[in-house]
Image 1 (cartoon, rainbow, N blue to C red):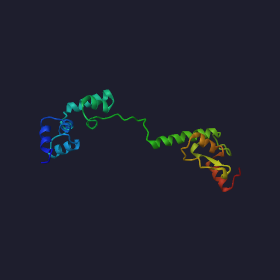
Image 2 (cartoon, rainbow, N blue to C red):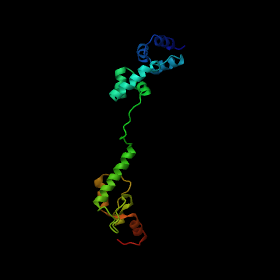
Image 3 (cartoon, one colour):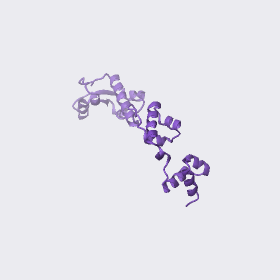
Image 4 (cartoon, rainbow, N blue to C red):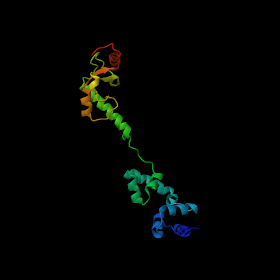
Length: 179
């Protein structure tokens, strides 16, 4: 047995917590955990009764926070998480979802700013089918689509464009329609 092993086993069997053993022996939590596992001594969460586990859930339902439950009960957050079913907020978005939604809102504002319909044929059914076509390619600083620049910066670029549907846009580039 190592430097700490016997003492850790002795302290753990006497009912001391990992935290108390760590403080008493001035060693790392991982050292305590390692020797307890090596000697098949249960961790604190393994000593929780079914009643304790149910009470953790009830307390979580009441307080609504894993951290608060951990603080009130003296358990580690990970222990509480192991035994409670948490409520997930459904309105949370990932960063990429937020960007996608921002781009859609911004495109809608830009389309509205340019009149909301194709300047050639009047099409306005589907916003995804409306494109910004630069009237002078030499003035073009960047393409509008897929950009997350400020609305004002995008608006400056849109001022160099006409709003056209995808059919008219294709016909412009094919030389069938003159603008």
